[in-house]
Length: 414
Image (tube, rainbow, N blue to C red; front, side, top):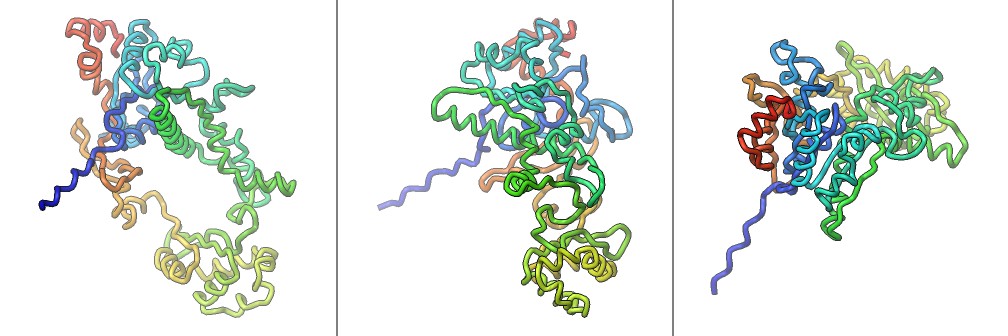
């Protein structure tokens, strides 16, 4: 009897065959497309030279030439997206956008409420051409409620979530959180919402409109402070590097040997404190009885941190972190941006990759942060404007050469 050969393993990317029309603006919307693209979706970023996207004008530029196709930030942030250029100020371009949506599974947009409706591209209208459409709308504060029309960038977004009220030096005024973190955070969360809606469509055949509030997603970062207020009536304020709920001490960032080198150390239990004492050689100050328990370490945290800093300042940050990790202590070197590209962990995982841009220069961009065991995406830098115009408009939508050329000349496809 012959044993049958095993069935071939399907190694195609999990979202192969899925098509996305991405109206997303700047970074958050394009990161949704990037994430879905890394998983195999065909993503078309819809943009126009009539209003060049802000991320295309963000330096540095390759070769120092200020050009929307040469922004290195754009090439990293939009990897995974394609590009078609449509001047949506024109009725003909809006008609083409609807025709494109008709052959897509997903639409993404992160404009304010009402912007898509003003273009005749809202969910109800798009469902006329694609009834089972999954559409992700991700305005700052959601599609309804008193704040639905609020205008934000990252800074005001984190202020509205309460996050800024708990960042800063202990006892000092709020120091607003660096603003760009919210964009990739919401982009990846938004992609997860799309996947959930697609799973629902697989079961029941119906699409849906996802009302994704960027503000409510970022608000999850204040969860511990919210629960402390709900349970204990305490309103959190800036605490510097101390643990937000006084659940660890020491808990901070301490200087190391070299210029601007630091290590983070967090001790959450008495057993970890004993391990840290042993790693330091059990100095007399650490053996003091008032430091034996967490309550005592919290009462003496300023002097504790000062003594610990005196010990760490002559140590190599990476070597010390590795030694403390071996003792079961949560410690890590504080990597600066220049460290990231050379870090052995990130190099081993392909976190950053070298690519050749079609315009002829090499650059470093993000690798695929969604990694699957059977597949590996081919990551290319963010696209040249209009890279996919002919393939989409002549191929997918079937425009004749004359029709296509006329729309280009009229700056509809532009």
